[in-house]
Length: 375
Image (tube, rainbow, N blue to C red; front, side, top):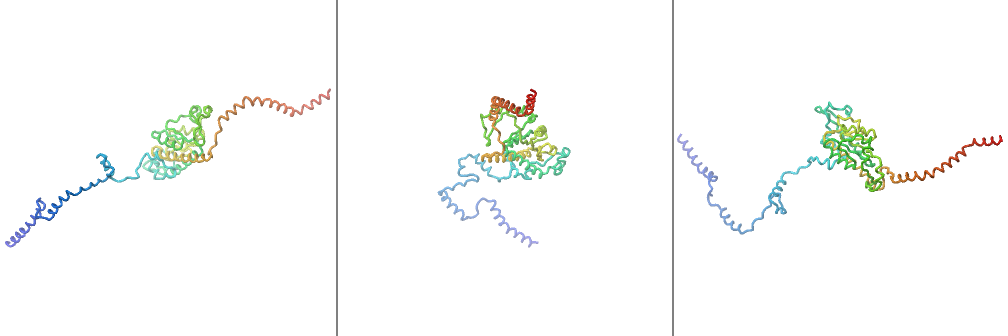
């Protein structure tokens, strides 16, 4: 037992100086021993004082041109320079400012703009069964393949009508559709209605729209001012050559009048609408503003392409429509014929009638011969 204790004590004594040295490195602030580093630093200090001061390193996000800026602006520049650049962000205004063309429409674009969502199964119209893809949680899903095909067909119709100088009317009377309707009409150089449709504007258009202002343009769409103003006042009210209705459910009267006047129509047909009321239906969601804006923008782009084609041919001297007869010539001819030509025609007609009577009276000769014989 004694031997073991002595050995243990000797081991503890040997470990004490090592622990003290290790702890002294962390606990004490004084340097242990003289080191050559201190003498080197002490000699180099006066050299650093006399040397040229180091140039300031510019902070990240700043430049030489930003030296005179305030601290707040520099802080903003640093803050905006942080992070990563995000691309492919959805911007709702892009559909209005730069709508796509019919060839750029894809199924992914239609799906992102909610054109496939229909109404509940209890509100469906059985005539839309050919446009429905299936049912999802009690809601009908419209087939996007059918929507894309019918949208391209309607865009082709709008382009050809615009290329032949026809009048295109865009109608959308629901809340929020005003900007889409106006933008589509601007692109197609047509007309728009975003408020209530006045019943009888087509069937009784002369009484309702006869007082509206009219103008005459040449083949290049340049207005001809101070010409035929008096004649235009009595000219009949114009009717559209094509009507694009974005909400056919609320505008049944408009579609009925178009049918009576043989005006073709294009409409967005939801699962609760009647597709037989329009000439060219587009099966899609008519309740979503994104869906309506997309379809109106595509049709507007088609009208713009048609107008561009028409103006290109007009610059070459070729009109894609029948030119209208001058109004003044018609009026002058009618006024000249009434007073003078009637007088000149009356004696000639009497002479011709006498000649015809003399030629066509062979029965009088035998009567004269009979009278001579009787005498």
